[in-house]
Amino acid sequence: MKVLVTGGMGYIGSHTCIQMLAAGIEPIIVDNLCNSKLAVLDRIEALTKVRPAFYQGDIRDEAFLNQVFSEHEIQSVIHFAGLKAVGESVAKPLEYYDNNVNGSLVLMRAMRNAGVKSIVFSSSATVYGDPSSVPITEDSPVGETTNPYGRSKFMVESCLSDFYAAEQDWSITLLRYFNPVGAHPSGTLGEDPQGPPNNLMPFIAQVAVGRRDTLSVFGDDYPTPDGTGVRDYIHVMDLADGHVAALHKVAQQSGLHTFNLGTGNGTSVIQMIDAFVQASGQQIPYQICPRRPGDIAECWASTDKAEQQLGWKATRDVKQMAADTWHWQSNNPQGY
Ligand code: NAD
Ligand code: UD1
Image 1 (cartoon, rainbow, N blue to C red):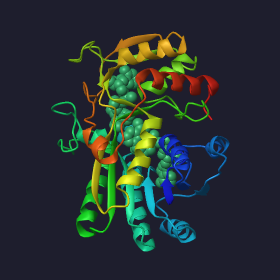
Image 2 (cartoon, protein in one colour):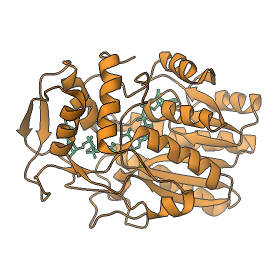
Image 3 (cartoon, helix red, strand yellow):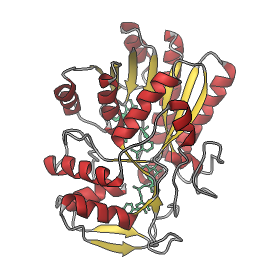
Image 4 (cartoon, helix red, strand yellow):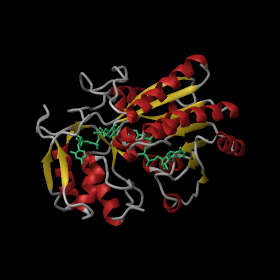
């Protein structure tokens, strides 16, 4: 099976390509490299002995996409390409809506031109906003998002579901990721944020490796067991396996399929720091700071639907997430 992977050079996309190749699925990668490096392709080749077809280009360029589709018998698309930094989305809403929403619409048009009717979309738990209860199931309310990034994910979900209502022979899969962390166990592929990391795990890793002095812990007065924010961190290799499961189980069946990809477990900021200290043997100096605007106290996924319908369950624990992140960061202190 050949699958077009938009954003396949990025953090989650690159790990997914590895797991696809291991499952005998051929990725065709499209990426404009706005947030990734060509070196990723060499790393994928070194790990798998396969150099996937790679096209450098933008998903908003319909003629470019038509050309890629014309060169391969593509059965499905996994759509990772997009911008993902919440703070930046507040400062640059036009860029975010153009890349994430317009980019997805152009991609859908190119798919329709090519007669490819199966798409797996990278959505986010951010579409649930501040949940009224946990664990969060797939039918929990969505749409109360607090920033342009989150709204762009919700808008694409809405566009895809309206599209499905009109074209019911398509297979549209919305995967709502919780908090992806970790790295490939080889230590050769991982997350490589440009500039100061926005997310907890890459920030901890950069403090541990000496690139940054201190971690700011955003709030210790939440109604959680230790007062710090609780999230459902999921190992990127488990997430990658979740995409392979979606390709096998639902991407060939028409329907609008929605799944949470999380572990079902909550971990606090302090617990994550402790896990990282254990895994790395490094100190992580931190200071308690005010809450970050827009943050919620806690969230974790209900995983029942993915287990039942995809036959997939995350298996890697927080210890493994910390160990693999440290392996990657210590081998690649400055990233790729
Ligand atoms: P990433 O930035 O590492 O990967 C995205 C890739 O898409 C990059 O390689 C980038 O160069 C490429 N890209 C961006 N705009 C493009 C365009 N217009 N045309 C072609 N390529 C383009 O991000 P990631 O962490 O791998 O996330 C992948 C997807 O998952 C994103 O859609 C993101 O919103 C979503 N997601 C990520 C997280 C997370 O915490 N990492 C959580 C939930 C959802
Ligand atoms: C963030 C995004 C969310 C996105 C998700 C992807 C915001 C407001 N939300 O969510 O849209 O889908 O990433 O993984 O950015 N923390 C610190 N210090 C730091 C960084 C984070 O204490 O330097 C805390 C946060 O307050 C939070 C936890 O760590 O309690 C996790 O934060 P983060 O990794 O940014 O993820 P989310 O806030 O869940």
